[in-house]
Length: 248
Image 1 (cartoon, rainbow, N blue to C red):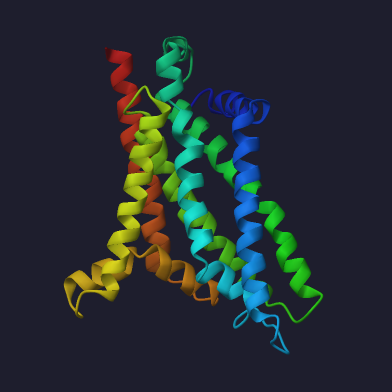
Image 2 (cartoon, rainbow, N blue to C red):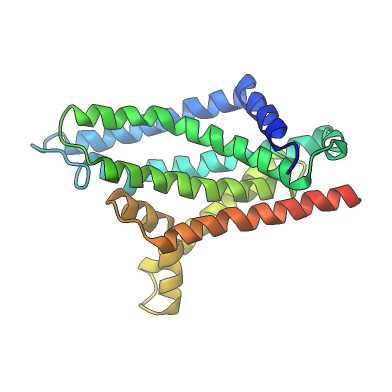
């Protein structure tokens, strides 16, 4: 995968020297601050705050604002990855450079994933705030962040694939948002269908159930396999698409 680091560095510079990452960071932290504030105010009357039954669990496992911001962020971050390159024509120079197709895709994806991870770093202050008011279970904190990073990694891979299918960032955003919303709706089926095959499938892919489990410190290997599948399969398809451009 020659040239991966060069692509990664180029994409990271593109994210942080343009307004995109900063605007998304501002909106994301605004939504997260609002979500955390609402959760904390709800638990303010409780005498003891613990991570497995208090506001942090509610923040990661029950907050609708967190889920909405997660879907929107993962749709917006990768929308320019290939769509903008194709629209501007710079993709031709990239394809003729001594960089493998896998290096191009992984370099762009890892830059998007790194940017996504950096946007979550300021939310660690929420845990610091709660640490001063009660006991914090750091194992549960770790599993909660594992949940948002695992799901985010899968969602960003889907967004990277969608960006390779169009020359419009807006269309790429809409395709990704629709796909992720479809996964969310499919997960709701676990509350609709009676116990059986459909119920099991919906429960397995449920985004909300995964966040709820991890916010309680429950790490299910099946969830990790699902996240890895959501990462590997879209990236594999994206590599194939980029390779097809080289032959055209």
